[in-house]
Length: 387
Image (cartoon, rainbow, N blue to C red; front, side, top):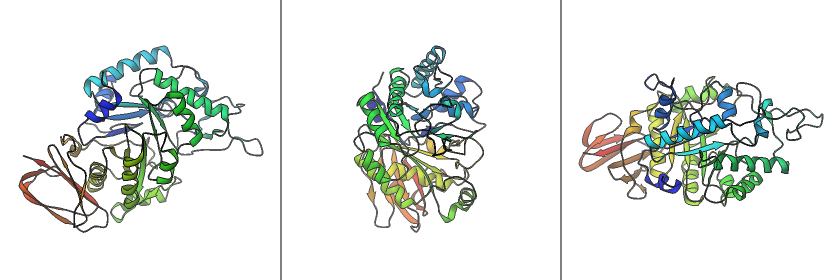
């Protein structure tokens, strides 16, 4: 079996990831275990977390489940789920030999079933009431006392259990992470396992965690005039607006690629209307030109369906092979990067349309057109395959 590093380096591009929830399209039915595995294996990286996903009545992909009714106190996974998950991992690696698997361990907040109600690991206010956490789930979440050293040790311990199961290659921390927990986790799991943290496009967090993490989960909602429906949806909800800019996303992605630990697994997700294809292409080509990372275009969190569901786009089926050069900033403001089988053009938000000319005939992936000269609009991008 390939090492984690070999799997990361061997994959072709575009390279997509699955954040908790997967493809949500009639063309990809997932009523059986094999169907779920085949859909998930179209991605090169995924992570899951049993308490949240099972709570939303969504089947897990790998399927490990903690062996305690209070997941925060678990010391192992159930024997049945471990056997099932190892078989699922084996099958997905048959379908996609370059997949990487991560497990989210809860550290910030959780449903009340996570711990006994009298646990010292809940965060309490001065009236001894447990503090409310995220309110966007299937039931209320409550804050964990992540400054409690025993709880920090417990998180690191559970991370080690997940990796020693043989199912996962590393762990994922949501909610911008916590330095002490990340440090303890790295010490506990060693240097070979992966750690990724949801730090959006916050370079300051990247600097703080830099010695310990392999990548950022960049969960993003860049607001622009071409996505007003998404903007209004987010602003009219009780969710954190998460209003990022395309400038910050680009700059943070470059910083994370240049500074986080090897092997790097930066995962860049942009929310949007599934029919906004130029937004999907902008996210995909930004990730392709400015990183060797993984991309995802998915539903906005405020929707009532489980988060991060997404379509699978034919644009992602282009077989670019591997990058053969670093990005090149063109005089017209667009960015170009060469791959084995084609060229990627990313045209940043706010830039005018640009004209791209090749010496030989190319096939434009977005519409199948063939020619030597093409136009690419602002906040858009495209892939031009060699014939």
